[in-house]
Amino acid sequence: MPVKTKRRARSPVAALHSQAYERIKHEITTLRFRPGEYLNEAQVSKLLRIGRTPVHQALNRLMLEGMVEVIPRKGVIVKAVSLNDVLEMIEVRIINETYCARLAVARADENDIAELTRILDESEKTVTTSDTARQMTLDRDFHSTLSRAARNAVLAECMRTLHDRSLRFWFISLRDPAHHVAVKEEHRAILNAIKARDPDAASDAVRNHIDSFRKNIMRNILGGGQDTP
Image (cartoon, rainbow, N blue to C red; front, side, top):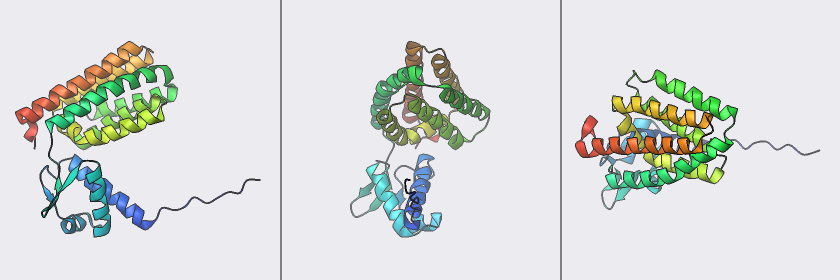
């Protein structure tokens, strides 16, 4: 008879580090911590009511992920929004997500389709609201579910990392109400193609969706729309 082992509880230190990481990341993603803003560890610790050690660890992790950078003799700064960065990520997204959509057409089961439908229905309820953070979360949930439906763990992990790095750009783009409406229509086209088991339509719908994002984010960054940082 196999011996049951108790699942090791998460240490309080690890939990605080994770909490600090998620909180700071959210503040950066939603532009509460603005690009170019210096982050004083003591002040961030006081704001979040979390000790300085977890805050320091979280900032180190965010530095590795490219969301903050260390300026010698000055401190930690929120990394500026770079058009070149977002265009490079878009190039990688088009290659990977169109292939992901093709795999999802062949491999998605009824549970995947039901979850994509649920997320899309929930997203459509937010069209008339100004809760951009919620809209962004649902957008990411849709893409995460799509990547899992492809049944390729390596691809899903690549997409997770790429989406993490894209979140701040998603937030900027979704502040435009017209683009928010367009995203829901584009997601619906992706879902319909998967339901129809049409790999070409799914790939084309994803490409169109990402290209729509590219045009909108360029308009916002270059044109300074929606109080772009």
